[in-house]
Length: 117
Image (cartoon, rainbow, N blue to C red; front, side, top):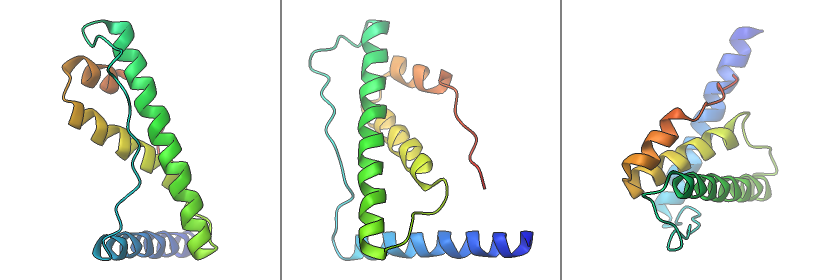
């Protein structure tokens, strides 16, 4: 039974990767959401925490929409744990893009939920 689960997991990951590659090849841009930070002073710890919360909320919204779009297109549920990985990857990318040391430090201190397989 465990072998079948592993095989199905690999097949699901391969299918998602191929769908992502097909979307990239077709010129479809991944979903994005702009996070405003003009009202924040990133020298203050409270404002850095506020920005982190905004980034995480935006990533959650985008990944929820992507999960819904996946269902609409395939009539299949997204693979288990996909949304959580999507949020993690989106937050990681946003933190790298901002390149603020205080925000990066807050991000590394935030506890992460272990992925379930």
